[in-house]
Length: 149
Image (spheres, rainbow, N blue to C red):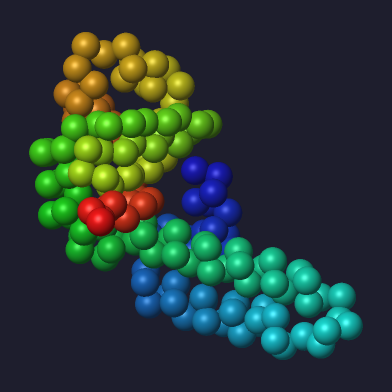
C-alpha cells in the first residue's frame, strides 16, 4: 500500500486512477525530469536519471491498477483464478504474490500476516484464496504469462 500511495502522490492522483489524467501527468513529469535536459556537469543530471526511472516505473505500476486496465483484463483474470491452481506464493509486508499454474503472477495488496497464516494453514489453499483473497484485496498482474519454447 505504501508503494501505491507513493506513486499516487508522485503523479498527483487523489482517488481513482484516471488513465487520461495519469498520462498527462506522466508526460509533464518526464519533460521536467528527462536526463537529456541537463548538461553532463550539472549536479541534477544523476538525480534526473533516478527520477525518470521512478516516473516510468510508477506510471506502468499505476496503469496496471487502473480500473480501465482491470476491466479489460477481467476475463483473463477470471479464467486464471477459476481454472488455474496456485503454484507458488510469497508474502512480504502487506504484499502477497501468487503465481498460478498457467504461469501468470498477481500481486495482492494489503494482505496481513494473520490472513496469510490462515491461507497457508487452510486445508484447501485454492478454496481459501477464492473466498478470502481474490474478492477482497486490490490486485494487479505483475508478470506476463510464461511462453513455451
